[in-house]
Amino acid sequence: MEIGISTFVETTPDVNSGQVISHAERIREVVEEIVLADKVGLDVFGVGEHHREDFAASSPAVILAAAASQTKRIRLTSAVTVLSSADPVRVFQDFATLDGISNGRAEIMAGRGSFIESFPLFGYDLNDYNELFEEKLELLLKLRDSEIVSWKGGHRPAINQKGVYPRPVQDPLPVWIGSGGNSDSVIRAGLLGLPLVLAIIGGSPIQFAPLVELYKKALHHAGYDASRFPVASHSHGFIAKDTQEAADKFFPSTQQVMNKLGRERGWGHYDRASFDAARSFEGALYVGDAKAVSEKIIHLRKHVGITRFMLHVPVGSMPHEDVMNAIELLGTEVAPRVREEITDWESSIK
Image (cartoon, rainbow, N blue to C red; front, side):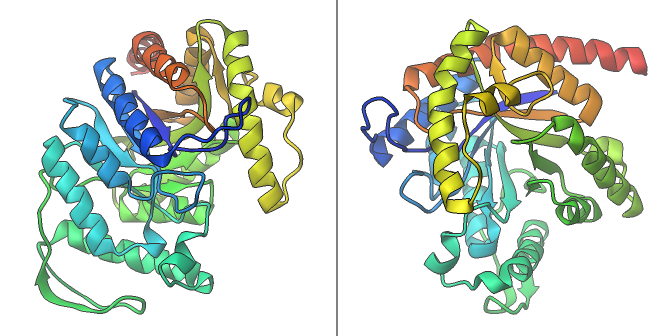
């Protein structure tokens, strides 16, 4: 069972002072968070790509590369790369470069993204949303599998027997499919034989169990051994020494972000009752002390089949020291507890 962190490098106003941290300062903070995550024994750190004012990470590979030379073990991934509006050649080159700097620890998490700002920014039509992703994923996988590539599609100039460099340390460079719970994307990941990441950020995590089974059926249908493929989750959460403290610290920035997005997307008002329901044992928020968060992750592994858990923290802007403390608790208290119980459980069912 792998345990890690994901972040969108948010720069929303401080809920108390209204001050906004600069993009540059927040990026430097995230590099410190990655270094700490490696130090406390976490397995993976993911940085999400966005192209708007309240997020500082338009280029995850650059941020991850800044941390690569200061870390030794932790895997470094996008979370996600918005492949539909990106050039797969540059994506591959960026992450192959990261793979070289980190000596084989880079991963790409490819997805459509839940924000649309990158499409007009890079000159793409949202009407081509699905076709763009399918075509560019096809090219990315060709680039991964072959040094010399010939390819032709409808949304990018053709490539005729061209070499793409540098080549990564890993062969193949890991490419995961990120999904918000869409059955088509889950099936696609299985048929292509790619690892799956589910964004479990609402409702009951148990509701994702059928999607994991659907993914495994697609793997089996395509001739793959489903037991060899990891399934990851990305879920909002926060850890403190005391569960009430964790909830009280995490709620204000979470509410701010959820209501801002709600106004943009037509969601209902997000209040403390909604938050408290989501952090219950059956909910999708992993907020509490080390014991409470550990128990929810263990439940997720046993009943949904998740083999990599990524805690998304912070949601909105939180004090850097609180985020660092949560990362330390995840690595030193939560991860050992989860790994031990899951190891014992897996041994008992064999």
